[in-house]
Length: 109
Image (cartoon, rainbow, N blue to C red; front, side, top):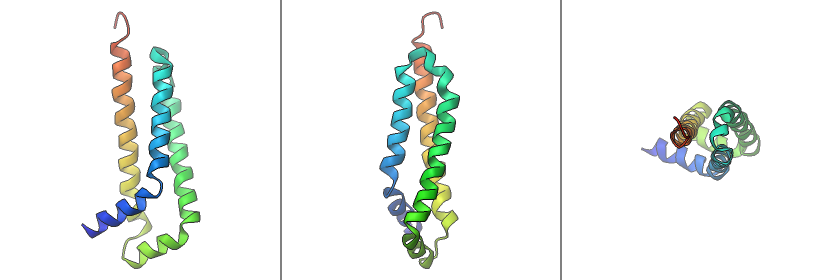
């Protein structure tokens, strides 16, 4: 439980940025309507690219904070793996739900 609390504390430092990127992807997909279905691949790679930038910048700018977690017995991988899995699954589920709703509203589908 302590580990989960520490991971969530670490995640709070950049969660708003990550959710903002997911929201922008959803708005782009919705904005293009039924033609937005073809953008899913680009949005997928955009999210992967931005997650990589977030990981890199957090590792650089929060180096001392990562040492804090390391001193508490939590490795860098223990911090990042659950965060990235949760964030990317949230993105994928949101995109799939929106894309299926857009496809259902198409005439003749």
